Image 1 (cartoon, rainbow, N blue to C red):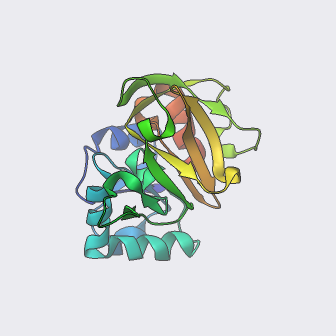
Image 2 (image 1 turned 90 degrees about the vertical axis):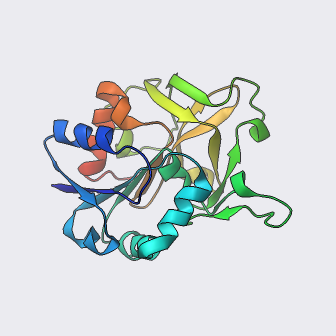
Image 3 (image 1 turned 30 degrees about the horizontal axis):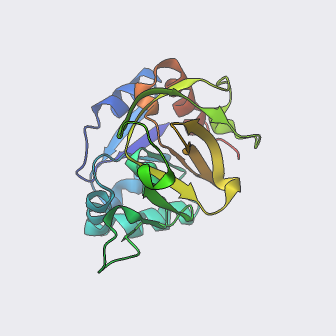
Length: 214
């Protein structure tokens, strides 16, 4: 099984590659959009600002290639952290009087990204550390074999708010209920870092690689 990790110029990808190595699959660092055809599934990492990540995806045909591969049904996709947020329609992180709608995302899972404060969070921001993840009643193989309430590792200041509640797979409580995992079709996202979340994170990655059904 060849798992492509998209390298579009943001973040340290080493922890993702090491986790895939531990699962004894073949991690492939994808540095050109045209190379997506060489893998069985795709992982989209992301750190930093939504606007920076979205801008980098817009360069070198990444966004269009992802649409062709993912929406065309050719490759399943897992977005991690900001990579999950990029699945949304837009982020209000970059909203101002000249751009009240914020920054456009990929739109694979309709919804918006908002600051934790805007959602009513009064705790310290960013949210950094381990927090329990509560699975929704909707059955999804992405979380198969992971006990409800398992802790995963989070680092974020913004949160995904999906338009359709059916796309929300799991939540975490950080003063307010926050989307921890989303999914639609063969597209999934986790706000937490599975590659930094010990055995539970490795189990989730294994589930993704083996082709979850939601």
